[in-house]
Image 1 (cartoon, rainbow, N blue to C red):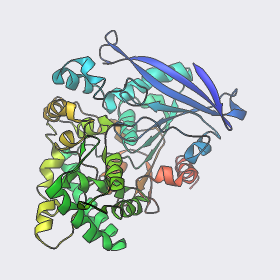
Image 2 (cartoon, rainbow, N blue to C red):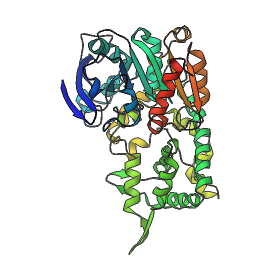
Image 3 (tube, rainbow, N blue to C red):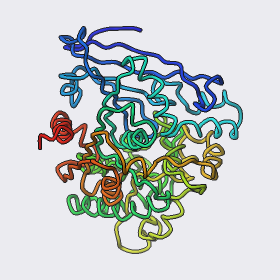
Image 4 (cartoon, helix red, strand yellow):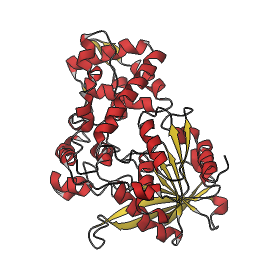
Length: 431
């Protein structure tokens, strides 16, 4: 273990060895990384543990600088563990560089089948006794981290003293098709709200899309197409996302000796916003997190998109309507335009065709839940369907919700201590 300090905090890095397949504890092992954070003034005290599970899939835990955002509130009473879920951050990262060590696409897909919420929760339960001495801990799950928390309640509630969820109540039984069939209308509403705020962006988006349909430029190996441009709509799920998108679009074109071209500034901004280089598991496993019931996900977002022809860029350009941005959807073309994903296309195809996904949630156990649970549900959340979330909330015994339109999906980051305060008050019956 390696301990060091930031202002007001003591940080300790932990590395754990866990089975790749928890059903085969004597088999291959992988390394999991977690960062313990405690208030400097309480470093020697016995404190309850709070485990933070990041959103995703595919993102390592946030790297804080000091006691910022919600962390400052948490360390007032908890010893916090920021866990890099398997395959992310420093926890045996899985990407185009490391996955070939497994072998070919079939071996890679079989390996990644062990990187869903069920395995993440078993990692947590493997780690917990080593840190807490066997005591249950509080879990704070953001977005996909909330999905993991619901799995935790289904599989190992004895390890939990309290569960706090922000923007992360999954449907217990929806197929990926159902998830995206609910998602596209939400995305369309977010795009309409953006264009109402910035009406000048309607024509800008059409001009950019038309240019891309003809020229298809490439930046640092990243191919910019109408579809990849549309995927900038993922910004619209965050509190400041509409403004970020507007400022990005206003830098689109420059005059050059060869005529009007897309600016380097714009192309680099698009590349950094849409690249999966830092989180490839988001693309590889995004639909797999919904896989249950013996059905393949089979590129659900791509198939369901055909039911919403208004999202087709070519059709929009033929008429006078706006080009609609898309959001949190993964498509086969992602594995053609992004150099971080290109080598993993066949692996993605195998994951999309996989049918042996086990159920993630136990409705009977959730209906008998005894763990105090509170969840922030962000009204008209672009990433997690509100109706699905509220149905799940009603299916988990004792769960208390805070439904708010004050924040978008990133409410835990934007709201910081206030959001955590509200959830803690709910589970403690203080509101």
